Image (cartoon, rainbow, N blue to C red):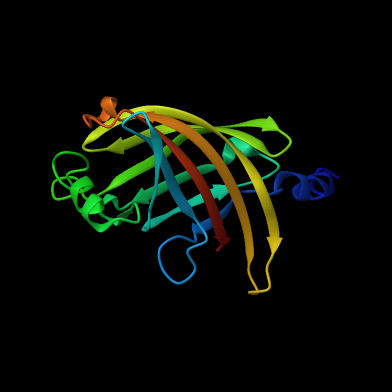
Amino acid sequence: MKRIALLALLPVLTVTVAQADEYIIDGTGAGMHSSIHFKASHVGISSLWGRFNEVSGHFSYDADDIAASSIMVNINPASIDTNHQARNDHLRTSDYLYVDNFPTASFTSTSVEDLGSGRVRVNGTFTLHGVTKDISFDAVRTGEGETPFGDYRVGFEGELVLNTGDYGINAGPVELVLAIEGIRQ
């Protein structure tokens, strides 16, 4: 009788815990459906817009357990593009990004909080110019599902203001606009 009771409980005891799906960021390369744009003041008169053309990374995402989600993003600062070659070259120098000494900028999440209705708060560490600081920003899920390419994707957008002085760069505050699309693995 004990054996039958134990066998009846076996399916309950072996229930597997759902895990977050893994995604590769569709960034650098032929797809390039992810981007990091920025906006900075130009001498207090207008805004200068630019982007980083090389973005890569991965994330875990579970819509039913947002806290199980995480993200890691790499940015190649040398891929800065402001639509003006001389300015791009100057921004790569030791006056600003100093890409020869600091060839990578990166973000690694420490936690993701569910804010409801597809909105999340992402907390983590951002490394730029050899300095690592804690940052947080809000993002929203922009879409999710099967694509005509035969894969499954999810997208997020977010914005934050980064004080470049915190990273040893004298460029004032910079607004970052993030659009991340991941391809489920």
